[in-house]
Length: 235
Ligand SMILES: *[C@@H]1O[C@H](CO)[C@@H](O)[C@H](O)[C@H]1NC(C)=O
Ligand SMILES: [Zn+2]
Image (cartoon, rainbow, N blue to C red; front, side, top):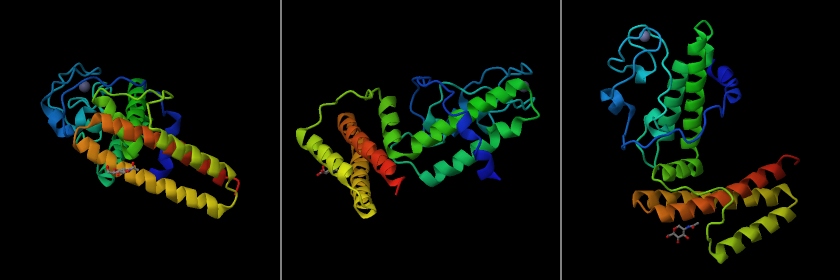
């Protein structure tokens, strides 16, 4: 049942504007939100009261509440704000949240709740996808620490690295056989794994300059991965 329903998700993907996450103190899990005050219910006007089920529903009338725009992805996904996330737990939390907020479950509810459920669902998708892949997770974590890497801007990379990338790109462009392309894929995958390990260490040491450098490298390799995928399609 779950797999079928998930098919409708890409439609709502991207509706939520970026940059809505506010500055908030470090929190490890959703449970720590329990003490925060929630706004009045839009439906019954009841007080927020003790937050249950992550504050998605009014404890009095059970109406779905709007998303909290100040809540970051780590808090939403009930993860410690750290580069090392447990992807099995992340997956479990994703399914748990979609069972609460997915638009398919709001067909018989008011338009307001339908709209909120679309927003929640998009937000949950966004948080899940962002935290699942090491590159996007690293970029997001860096952003929470106030460091951004603008797309397309050349962060001063050392010449040796740029030569390495040029070399791979040239050889990849010439590669014809499936075996040759597969070899590139495994080389690039090994690089990404090594960079991911290095990135994890950089975050553990709060070395954000190092993290920025490593993420820039990962972005180069990620572009190569995209090219490899395109080359594989016609084979
Ligand atoms: C990972 O870190 C080690 C130790 O600093 C370094 O020697 C290695 O080149 C790094 N790997 C990559 C792919 O940059
Ligand atoms: Zn209510």
